[in-house]
Image (cartoon, rainbow, N blue to C red):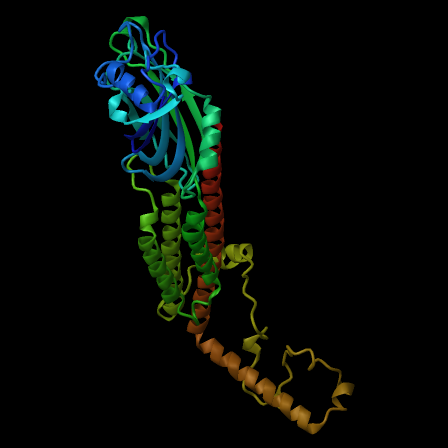
Length: 449
């Protein structure tokens, strides 16, 4: 019986402990005296030095080797090389024919000897890889394979079998797992492929273990997803800044610059492989594209509002489409500050000589009996107010460009509100779609365990 310990599948044999009660053979060793020296002398004469051939009396008899292993630690998963870096404890149990003795005759039932004195199985891990699928990174589940077989002997010489159920190996691995890093052991499966009779002379007996791992996503959620969501939220609420009073474009360019630096710093956390593009990369690209689109929208709105004095009057179809229908749709209909009276009926004639004045102020529309109770100072103030209103209407009549500028300003506000609504809708649909894909593929991979 021997115990082997290896990492990255290199075997390190620590030593051999031989116990007489576990060795089954048709022959037993004879000791000259019931001491350790007597047992060692018998071993040297009959067992030691025969390390080149299998320990069987008849070479046509196969050597049965029981294999079990415990996953002691998961160090790393190399996505680019598709390899799993682990520490394993591998136990191999086999029978050496002729290696048994009478504990009473030899004085002991157990003895420790150097490993080089006995034949050791040439069991290797022929396949040690992972078929990594990082599409759902960082919520991915991976399946890695360990394949044990003899390096030299065919299935006619060496038979491999499981020393214990794979469920027991999985339980032991969870109990002794020392590293609590990025990966979590989820399940462990095992199988022994059948070998056709016509391939017995050339094929090796094989045992295959499947290691199911799940990535702990907390690190990536905190360092990648949450900051991206926060930055895109800030960009969303930047639409509430008035473009005519605040330099919204500079604010958005600062956001884009900060997000670009953030992606460069966090690039080492992303997996590097050419098999598939992770959804998280599409998420980052979407966030950056939305920020750039938001900046372009701001440039358009500022150009419309700040350059309105150099543009001509709005086309009629633009007024009808945007200032009437779209403005009502986005709840941004223009509400004039003042309802002017008919400017054609107002002149600069003193108010006491005019009889055709249309009063817009309800306070003026009083009966003659009410006016009799007004003081002279109040009547004078009313005269001044109406004269100022007449002057303003005359100025407004001779400056139609101001009305055109107001229409362009209103057009910019309507387009800004419309694009803000579209931005919210596209952002919501995109995020819901990506989350749905994440959940779908995660459940699909979990169902294959």
